[in-house]
Length: 135
Image 1 (cartoon, helix red, strand yellow):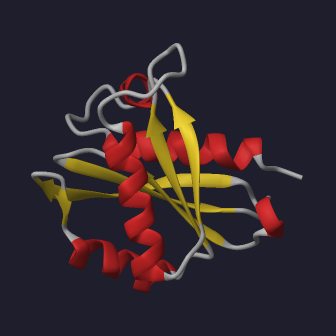
Image 2 (tube, rainbow, N blue to C red; image 1 turned 45 degrees about the vertical axis):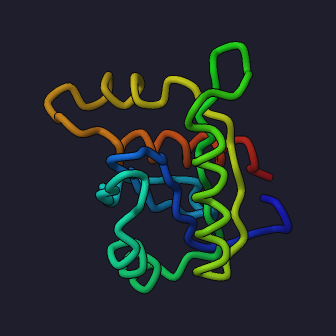
């Protein structure tokens, strides 16, 4: 883990209308879907996010950076990065970014019955980060 982080980590799948949230644990290296936060015109429901932080008290934040398959940035890359910076500033927690491609498609494959899979996409993002940063 970066800087030997140990504890609860919140993962985010940023979107302009919905933001998926997952909660994970560095010790077990597992993650589960937690919530879908509404966002209007790219402005998140900060009250909902604050409740998640108060409930889980994470030691770190992971934000998925949407990238094209060739690794180049796309339209949502910078807004996702800015969202991570805002999370860090508001909640005084370190933020780690992980490039993500196709997490929503993978989440759809896991949860065929659900219409909104953003929380499952966040779970995949967080699981990938936990795996990439395991000791």
